[in-house]
Image (cartoon, rainbow, N blue to C red; front, side, top):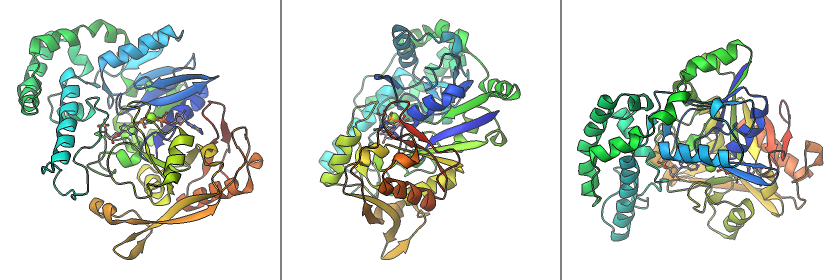
Length: 446
Ligand code: GDP
Ligand code: IMO
Ligand code: MG
């Protein structure tokens, strides 16, 4: 009887999907609690690849119920496409899907606005027009580099209390009012960006058409979690994105618009924080980031290129090349603190095989002073210079290793260093893409 939250401890794409799939073998319920189809969670099973954007990554286990909590933003078309795609691959899970009526819907105008803003920001960068958000230095990009899935505008409408929730599609009058109110402002913005506005009638028809699809899945997700707990079941709360993309605790404004941190799992599902017993942070053995924003240990040389190539570092959702760098203990200690991590799952150890030396960062230099804690002022991060140290690497392929003993001593030392410097037990180590490519360390290394 455990409620576990699994979160990204870096900038997303840490390998959360694979870990959730692995842990879901014993889970009765897997719940997404925030984000939307900006997420791309990959699972590789016997050579077959699945990439989930909205459906929780526990879906491949026949007995597991999958739920979308109130904190998730749902693009109905994307959800339906994902459900249909799974059917086509022989995975029938409709009886196992639950959706919170309070989850917000991503509307076509959210997607259009997200895209229009990104295009305008990129154009302003090119022309040198002052379009950057206030407080951002000139070297920063005005564009966030969003996934253009409508995430930011949807959460903005939610917070501004003019969003459309799943439950609204069952009440035509209310739905019309909500869409009318939202479009009265959004169409002005779209026109400002040179985009045609949307008509209330057309959006209404489009959204209403999904009512019958949603109806059978409606459930109170907080109550569902409580029931599973009460009968001794296992619940997994699946984070999307990562700690440093969190709206509050990330590298603002280069963040997503939700709360991927462990605290978000309580508000995003409707349970109290006392229910959560285990918090697993997932981190790559190096670091990556997609889109704009600070990334202290980023490598701009051929080593960075090698990480991209060997790690297959291209986005699951947008196909964009991921920026790569060495593992950053400053960032991981920050993640351990913000999330209250009880465990760390380190992924992609196999990708570092073949490097003569492997790097890590344990401190930054800020205005000539060494710092070992995350700077309290977000803007200071831009001036931080990472202090990168190098250790001997290992040449042996570790893909088939299933225990610590099978790893070269250098790889073991590197994992021990991670555990020690982050201050959280490393309980899993990923050694390949396949769901079985993992070393289960139980209570940790030490
Ligand atoms: P997520 O968003 O956190 O679920 O991660 P993504 O699926 O976007 O990206 C992680 C990528 O790394 C995927 O292609 C995974 O299949 C892959 N992956 C996960 N764990 C490992 C691992 O231990 N080794 C290798 N080589 N690939 C891994
Ligand atoms: P998973 O769950 C990596 C990034 C985008 C952009 C910023 C804001 O697969 O780890 P958004 O579309 O959310 O408004 O974009 O956040 N981003 C991700 N980066 N993995 C993700 O999800 C991401 N979801 C959003 O690249 O920098
Ligand atoms: Mg991903």
